[in-house]
Figure 1 (cartoon, each protein chain N blue to C red):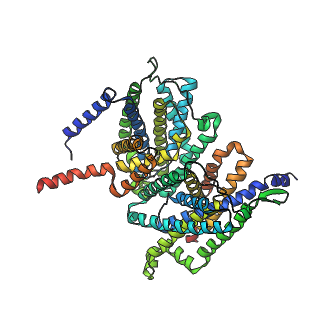
Figure 2: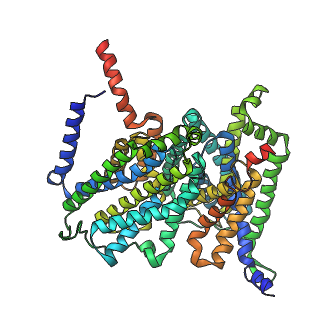
Figure 3: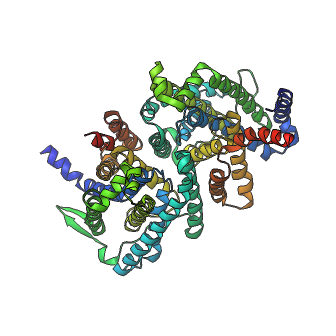
Length: 296
Length: 320
């Protein structure tokens, strides 16, 4: 009885956690793949979310068409941003991660400043399309429609990404490039195209997350940082360069950030680090470790 | 090489200039110089990890913040004696660095960078939300003027606070130089250059990295304590991501691995933010972003790297 009651009390938090976790997945998977594939640490990743979220804020007029336009624009701008970042970091490939980190950090500072001067210093919560506003009753709890739709769409997206990378021949090519770039090149594949494509894909996905996520985590100064840190934690917890790891990590961190904060609010500031600590203590390479899979 | 005489003369001029500064420049400038010295200590702490040990960090702002809040609480509720706040801040920060560092030093390279970034961001959110201790986003104000040592008067003037900061800076700078040149410092360099070989010789490299992490934490904490002496105010922003990013930028600009380079880099960063930022009101982060990008493309080995190349060019010129 007690367990059921507890479950019922926290159902809303748990569903919120799933929505937030899936949002984190769309963000973290790009970061993880770009690092795993291109060996580039992109600290401007949160900026791509911000761009997508501002696109949603500017272009959404309350209709579904507005959302679709925002999605298209966000995806294009995000992918273009990914190509630019890939081009900027390529010349630094031989100089180690520190220079890439500082460069992308600089880019994020510049873009954040430009966006802040264009949109102001306030957080601008974007409204979901009017067709998806309101709330429904689920098992005796009222819940916003948009979040349920978001969960469905993001789950489908996660499935597509997973199938694309783990089950398609295109994904096999990408994973092969991660594992042994020289060998893939020797097979006659221009690995640079693969690298740029993955960067554009990951960046576009982050911007897409921004468009979808704007009503949940609205655009504003500092949001790029929040998104970056959450994505990094997800990637570290899940395991670098792995799609299923990113999904697992994202769902876990989603629950920690909503259910955990609801259940033990007094420990809220330390929950994120505590989770990371426990996971890394048990599995230093993250939940899904690529190196382990390679040896198996 | 620059001849030892020239080098010593240059050093003497620099120290004299630093000592005479309060008589030469206005109050705002002297406060800025204090901030540069404080920030130099933070940059040195980042450099000990990033440059010497080869562990790139974006989390030293966490320890800077712990030190700053510790000093703020100690000076407000216990004693306004600066040396006490400084040492308590250093010790407590080293203590905090132990468990957090234990997690971080299990990783290397980018994973280390990611974990430290998360540590920094969690410290920031703790500073915002743990209102009972930090007073949240209102910030911690009402901190009394610092009394450096027992029996001394409290320092009301910015010029006098500057001397306190300068004295601590010089002591810590010399200590850091000694540490880096010591067998311990060499072991840290060994971890950076070839960890596998260090382990094979019998060094417990993770233990050394953790010890280095705690020392770097203590240094950042003491920098935070001095920051409180200068500003007499702390807010969560002082433990935030921007501070960590700027400290890393200072190290990159100065030249990774060079302690004096880190200090020069700190001066460049603070002057850009506090002086140039004033001319283009509110666009300081745009300027800093451009500085980040420019530093990567134009100064691949930092200012210290440029200096290291000068004598070679001069010699080549002399031969021609």
